[in-house]
View 1 (cartoon, one colour):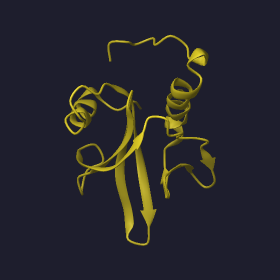
View 2 (view 1 turned 120 degrees about the vertical axis):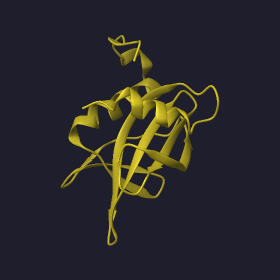
View 3 (view 1 turned 90 degrees about the vertical axis):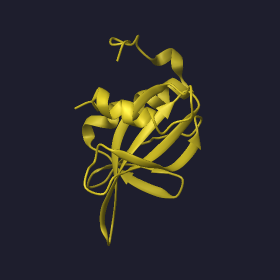
Length: 122
């Protein structure tokens, strides 16, 4: 399920002024202490990882990491769950967001391969 307009607006509030959202998807960092939830936000200038509030997956709280837009999100690893690596960190993602990750990479690295946006007003 795509992230809601409310979640997208919450993400915008943590980005630098003027950065336009292109893609947003949730990601999970799992480890010995349990799971931590994040929102990965792709703009025209950056790939930003937002940590969410403790008991909710859809309320971003702080910028956890920021990467240049030319950072590849894929290839998606398909071990027990789909996963991407950003820097030294492996994030699990839901399978439904794999096409979003592919589209974000295509936009940055092969924009001619992208279809026209069917919902440009979202």
